[in-house]
Image: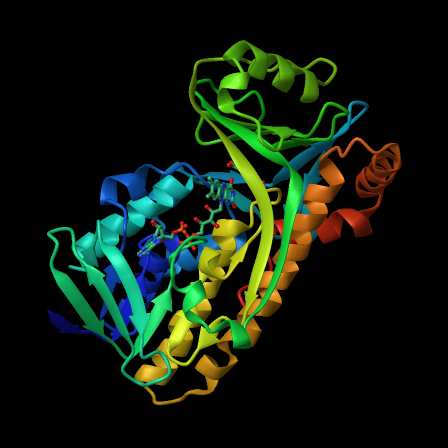
Length: 391
Ligand code: FAD
Ligand code: DHB
């Protein structure tokens, strides 16, 4: 069965759903295809921190109501070593801040808004294939949840299908460059039904390994521990997790409140960038084109920045007949991608223990510099709170 649409979007994660929302604001209709069920996509626990520009963008397109009511604005973060806990105030340093608002909540808001607008989404599809990408009628073929074979015939295809989707591989290897780094450690991430023991996030360097205290609400904590690659969740009892968190996050006169752990998972850490992010009428956005290690909370924010740029580029191309922004999309998006790739690598390298005593001395020196130098702290704040969207 053939179906005509302006933009075929592969993937209903935050990048795909937000792109559909932004295109709609330009009067451009789209159809989304997604391999998973809607319930699965809504339940995935992932990112938790929204940059200043992400929040401004969501508000500007009618997605800010629940975020403003339930999101937690944070002025900055705590960085610590076993000797010292130091607060960096982003508002004082760069006049911008961040919000704690889980990716699950962003996804809920997007699904609600798109459902109200009558967005066409095929969930539970299989055998997704992208064709005719260098023509002005690219297609996306798939089998829908009822087993019906369908073809979307579009003006453009947006590959928003994350790190394992088919869009990335649809760009011929001969024109593709890839940069990749796998880190020699992973994160054990837990969600716990216990009020956070801190008002703002704590990033802790410790000789046993990095630890972080984040949160999702006034009742729910999100915590992470550096663990060796290949660690299985069942190697870590809940008691062992709380003990390690308490040691690594430890600070004089401060105590970590423990509580029931409702979710635990091991997350590998990787940097990946694929260029170009455009091939003919296929445009990649979000994790489909790049992955950052989570330290620094950039993954979701980068996906949002990509689609903000892409929506503008597609509107210029499909509504005004101006190919300029679409031609510039990849190069413009990659400038921010590389800034965030560097920042995420830097935060990761500075805070995770490698076992090498020379590395540890360099890390301590770097942290002392951030604690004592306004210039150093401002650099971190500018990157963490996020650069303005380059629109
Ligand atoms: P995704 O959210 O991956 O969405 C892609 C969608 O495409 C998915 O719904 C997928 O099912 C779908 N798809 C895949 N294949 C196909 C196909 N063949 N056809 C159609 N659809 C397909 N970032 C942070 O900033 N902080 C964090 O703490 C953090 N934690 C993370 C934890 C995990 C386990 C992971 C995987 C990522 C985490 N990230 C984190 C990164 C952040 O969640 C991502 O950067 C963000 O989800 C990117 O959004 P996206 O829409 O580009 O990709
Ligand atoms: C969260 C994850 C991060 O990677 C980070 O740097 C900050 C917060 C979180 O899940 O809350």
